[in-house]
Figure 1 (cartoon, rainbow, N blue to C red):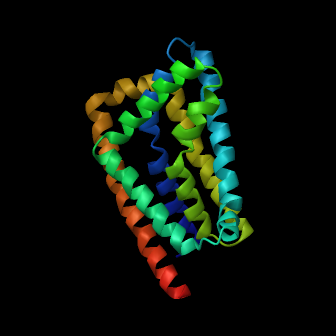
Figure 2 (tube, rainbow, N blue to C red; figure 1 turned 45 degrees about the horizontal axis):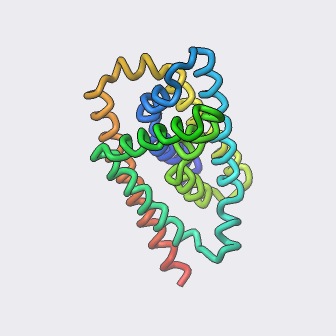
Length: 210
């Protein structure tokens, strides 16, 4: 697969996994009572922190796996199964409910302090699914220049997430309950197909190393 195709696949996978339309209503719940400027500050800071977390995994995730004795094939299979479970939750509207519960718990415990770090950056944006997808994608890009391109794709994807958070109120009103449900299910089906491809690639890689 050409590098350009891999980068397009990376952008699609990350965009679907991060689910900007699904984050928008949760972000509104997290920032109840905040001014527009405060919301903007939380959105920017949370997005930058999440980008930093994913960039670290893009650069060093594969090395960490190697030090633990985990092959990239095995991680692709595990990560693909995890992404498939996330897609299952998206199709059957369980992921949104879990995100909302996470945000409500954080408001109760932390009283909105450092909300950009927890739970916005971690785990709502840079959650297990996004981290797994990032490591999997980094494993398909061997050269340092390709890894830098992946970080560029991460930055572009995070820009879409930030834009969705900044226009959360308008996006939520525009989509409505029905629009959000349709979009989330459509993204879930796409992610399911991508996750199955990860598992197939992982099985091929595992058998090739045997």
